[in-house]
Image (cartoon, rainbow, N blue to C red; front, side, top):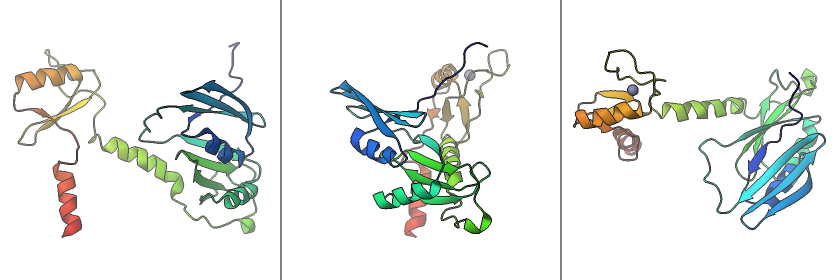
Length: 222
Ligand SMILES: [Zn+2]
């Protein structure tokens, strides 16, 4: 193959370019160039060989359920900690995982994006600091798993058999239920078909008026 990637530039959507610039300056990113106008502005930052593009649009984009995660490898985690302390940014020490034997910390940028910072060069066992939050590394995966489980354990494909009784290959998109509690995950065409032909069926959605929130509210006040 002739072509190969020469650089990868993460693009971060931020609410305020100046405060994001100030945060990433703590990691040595310098402001190189600014552009755009009015409702859409961008700022290009560079740290050594590495670049980050900050993008700011008005009105601000709706934040996604899972924020972006950016992982920065640095040569001196101790210096980064001093910089964060001086700037008054909170962070958690997550320990010394195999991919960052020099230590790792977790913090947030001003837009709530998760910033993990690791050091590849190892430090001696007696120079290590006890992690303040050894579980922090896993919380993002847990968050993602929780977001998936809110889909109620949706299967990958539709559970409604096709007319010739073979499995439907389309993705499961909608959970249907009836008042007796039968549920099935269906693709969009099969959900349509079920709602027309099984008039008691309805679309099961997780909302604040369901049994789950009511039960947990009773549990909390009991
Ligand atoms: Zn289907």
